[in-house]
Length: 478
Image 1 (cartoon, rainbow, N blue to C red):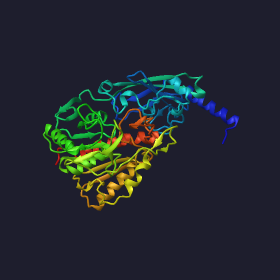
Image 2 (image 1 turned 135 degrees about the vertical axis):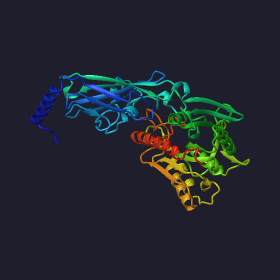
Image 3 (image 1 turned 180 degrees about the horizontal axis):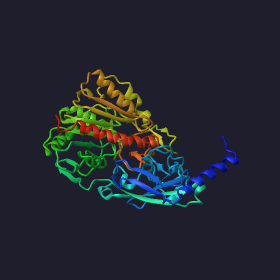
Image 4 (image 1 turned 45 degrees about the horizontal axis):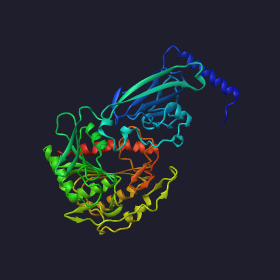
């Protein structure tokens, strides 16, 4: 319903009266804590604003490469002149609605002026950047070891902007890796990786992180877990110096030896095991093959079946895994028929490619991962908007198989509605996580899936629950 002129004038007069009553106070912007880990919550409030005034809040940072990242929310102060981002809805900006974390996760690769010119939307920001460089999955330790400074500004805007030009600024230091965490490079025989040792006196829970289809090592997750008191080994099995170049015929015994070596280094016998995507498939295989070495299992966006590997130099497919010198049976796959995605022009989704092979095989199919052999609690994590493969369906198939086989350990599946393939990746900025430049060699424009807010909330929640799960089933407890 439209307001008449008289009603509008009365509302404006009332707002001006309220604002004049608080004009003696300087508007203040509060950000707590002043310093935090990037996976910890932050709280942003405004006080002593003109009651009823429109307040625009922006957050900015500059990444290591000099790229500016900016977010914006527009709010209305209550009758006490306060705005609380965990309570009050943003009506316009890089996000809308009530979301106390969004002023950080919704940043876009733009300055404040560029953001205004683009109408605050990522659709109008022509940038290939998906994350600040320090937030990227494969970012170097050097990009992450220094804290990040976020500057926040609050400004009276809207109809009261001319009558009261109050503004306020605050800053927060965001720590990516605790300075007390120790980084240890591992090169033992054919074993490669990096250990992040949790600060303080141990013993600490132990965890091993296995990477997915890109290989290398997942230092981001390892350091994030170490920040929380979990000593974590980011283990490399391919695409890393001293290891094979491709996910082809990787021996499961390699992981068996690495788990034993890592546990023994800290006088323990079992460790938590995490892996995402093809790493989720991998950790299910490892824990099924060597169940006595695993204290807790967290497969992120996994498969229930064994799939082919690929030689990136020739693009030829073959067995990804071997056990006892024999290749494991596998399903082949080819990215020749991507489904066009509505998310961005020229992008595609691969989800449908795997549906039949994940859904139709009976439990006696040799390509099924024999998850009933696992002897530890399991926490499966997926998003039902996963556009890379249907990890939500695969996870449910794993749960159904475990039930059919009389599995005796706790099993939980965290399925996040509207979230995509990156529910398992902690990050500070999460606004563009549904996109990817290249996930599979030779396949540009593969969509990750999910909606920004759903992805952001899932990433935050999944990380907290992963930490709690590992600590609850601590590796020191047999």
